[in-house]
Image 1: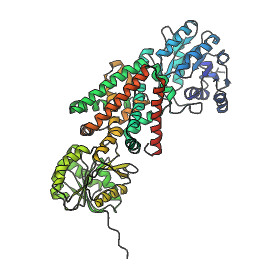
Image 2 (image 1 turned 120 degrees about the vertical axis):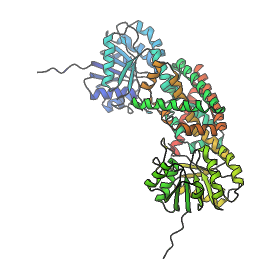
Image 3 (image 1 turned 90 degrees about the vertical axis):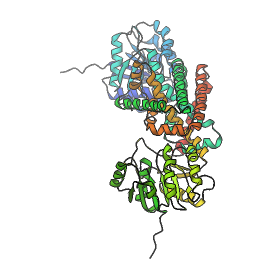
Image 4 (image 1 turned 90 degrees about the horizontal axis):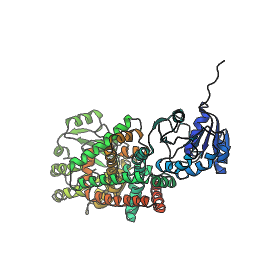
Length: 300
Length: 300
């Protein structure tokens, strides 16, 4: 008689089962090698009722401090600005040796807010994660079990994180289907500023620039929007509150990337003004080279 | 016995059967109400051989001045910078009352180059067109008969264009499946600067900005490219020569839109720097409003 191997975690708690949180639950509910017991916790009665209806958790809880008592791993899946507040509520209730994680899109400000809290609980391992996946939708109905398939999940463990805790969170995300890499919070925020936050800032801005044109032209912008503008507005159709928080929390890296970008855009403008064909063509060609690399990296 | 109605044109000549030109030919070859006789003309022997193989024209010609002799309508489908040169070759050979058209993405500089030529041939009606459709591919194999379906075609007839000529070119593009509107060349170039040319300039630029980052970060930009950056590189994967010509030929309107955009991006940067949440959120929301309008206009 062979024993079934123990799951990765006995009890896994998701606080905030929205797009990301409910996708983790769905995957873990399908693959019981991840956790024996899944608890979803939310302050909203509507969200709790919906999660219960969906049947993607074993238990649904209202009080985070009670929900986390038996947890081997807790993942906070709330907006970046609320992570430390939730952590302050649950850290006193967590058991020694448990793992605390979160899934925010920026890491430096989260780490700054968490540092004093974590100092008081040296027996809790904090392993922040950023699964680079999402859609334009939110809430427990928006999630799906394959959301993280073949996407990157970046971990930003602070110095001194126990190797076993880092290994278990790495395994968790691999079991979610993701490719995992770890880096410092500062490096994470710079990478995300250029690959995600700045493109969104530019997309929001060009919509505003078009909207500012005279009434007649504005109407025609909408009528005649060519493919170029369509791509911009696709990435501009995201949640305003979420993006406000990301911009404000990754202020320093984002403003640095914006400055570099504006300098480069002005250089391109100058090349066009002076008719410098070599500069124009070489800049266009660099874009094509990056595009080809993306295709080779299966990210496009 | 009922007579079949006469086609829109007896002889239609396409000079430069690339993506756009070969798509016109394909559609007209499928729908013989457009022209009784289709002539494709190209300086390249390879292109002529391929068009003959594809069987999308009734005749294939090498010499433009000979090809246009019987034409009721000639459409020049060559890059913007070469349009006036081709026109200078064919205008002396065209018959009185014929229509001359072209399909360039910018109109002011084309009109400036064409004006002195046209003055010498007052019996030729010039009706420039800009079908707002395309793909990343080029050449006679890239075209397809439904390329213009439900897309806009902007006409920029000069003052004094005979109403019958404008009506026939309008009908031609409607038979191609397009929605047609006419406007001045100046207005056309400003609309296209904001909806197409500036988005492409920004997309090319952000690829360069990312490429300029330190070696380590650059590699990770490619690895971790989130959806925002993917959308940018999709529109950055276009033909360098075509885009160089567009940027240089629409210099004035494009640089004006770039200036407005940079001012707006800097204002957004300042709002982030000073933590002005109202400004940030209102700019994000304007982007969403434009996006919704695009969906309602069937352009997304």
